[in-house]
Amino acid sequence: MSHDLDLTTEQQKLADQVREFADEVVAPAAYEYDTKRELPYGIIAEMGRMGLFGLPFSPEYGGQGKTYVELCLAVEQLARVDQSIAVTLEAGVGLGTMPIYRRGTEEQKQRWVPPLARGEALAGFGLTEAEAGSDAAGTQTTARLENGEWVINGTKQFITNSGSEITSLVTVTAVTGEETRVDGSVKKELTAILVPAGTPGFTVGPAYDKVGWHTSDTHPLTFEDVRVPEENLLGERGRGFANFIQSLDEGRVAFAALCTGAAQGCLEEAIRYAKKRQVFGRAIGDNQHIAFMIARMQARTHSARLATYDAAHRIVAGKPFKMQASLAKMISSEAAMANAHDAAQIWGGYGFLNENAVARHYRDAKVLEIGEGTTEVQLMIIARELGFGAAA
Image (cartoon, rainbow, N blue to C red):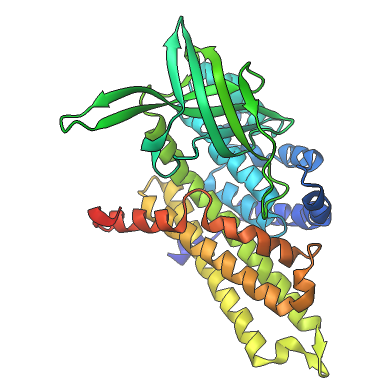
């Protein structure tokens, strides 16, 4: 298997290029923008010029013609130094652009994808609600057809890239009908609809006051009699949630790359400090306990990376990857959380200062076990893939 996970010369060059950009441009600005809780549009624009937002899309739509492997490489390198910047890219591509690229009509793709692929615009995907996320049946947002227009009403929450200065649209899942089954239960028809930013009745709420990911743009959304043309339907009517799950499976792999990058960043910071910090006349890394802590951090990071790139290569090869995506997401998020804990412990008091990258990773890492499917959801998916139907 290891041979299949080797990087090509071109892929290694991309990883090195993004690593250099992360170290020289992203890292020095991370504390400032984390404190201001602002998305650094200049850095996003530079990422756009580097082609990062267009990596897995064809040149026909302004993309780079690469694969999910290249996207994962870029996300991982960014997440080493700033998870907020990494998730802006990961969600922008996986949740914002990819559903349109995969399911959109030719007209939709020509209109929306090129500026998104160039990083000139961002898009969000409005799935989660107060009573709906993993449980799509709880969706309350509705959309009805009226005189050739969808009329949308409802609310969404925790939507990434939904209220930035360059957000161009949000894709929304809404109930467009109901079907009564033989047993009397009701099945909701969920449909995805494109809602351009600035549409009357579409309100972006104030940004959340989050524990971490302070630079990432995240908002609640409200839709009050929002009217968009009937042709803003994305994909087939009634296939909104099913199509989103397919996109989420892919996006979960890039999210795992983000987690792997965070684990790697914590590892690198721990190694650096353990070698320079002197206590009782020697480096703290000379103590077996500290050395063993760092060895475990390396083991977690290595395992996370192998799981992530196994899943990414399966996507590229056209092989089934649903279980591998969940394995990668769970393993890597737990690795990032554990490494953030250990890195903060190794840094001691300095690891408790927000200006320290380790402290930001510590705050940021918790959401990695929650976002794009909680650890419990990953376990449910893995169990189902192993044939345990009652695992839900």
